[in-house]
Amino acid sequence: SKNIPPTTPIGSLSGGERQAVAIARAMHFDSDLIILDEPTNNLGVAETQGVLSFVRSARDSGHSCIFIAHNIHHVFQVVDRIVVMRRGKVVADDIDPKTTSVAEVERIITGMSDKEIRDAITDGKPSH
Image (cartoon, rainbow, N blue to C red):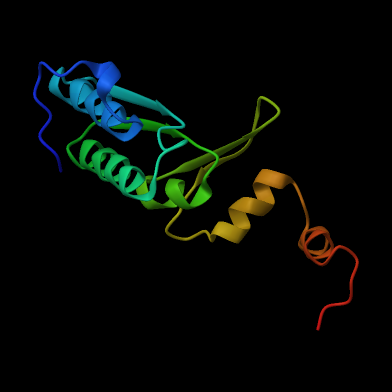
């Protein structure tokens, strides 16, 4: 964790630092709900881990968080429940990441069957 002086202009901060400031502000003002839309997008590995740590901290301190992301691995690191939307509609609700695999959620996201996924991966080539 890095100490950022409160007088630092936001424009001079990195993407991860900006996300951290936004989450910290929401926590400081005791927001009931924190909505994070692609908070790890375009961040480096260290910045991403910092943002995910902040999200876990917010969640663990009792703040409700909506974490919108395309990176399923980041989602699995910080959420208690997954909702999948496709083309603006909810296609799966109340998925428990503790009892559901990444592969299962990916199938729900894509709407593909196991065979369709295997065919897409092998591109029609026989598997060895």
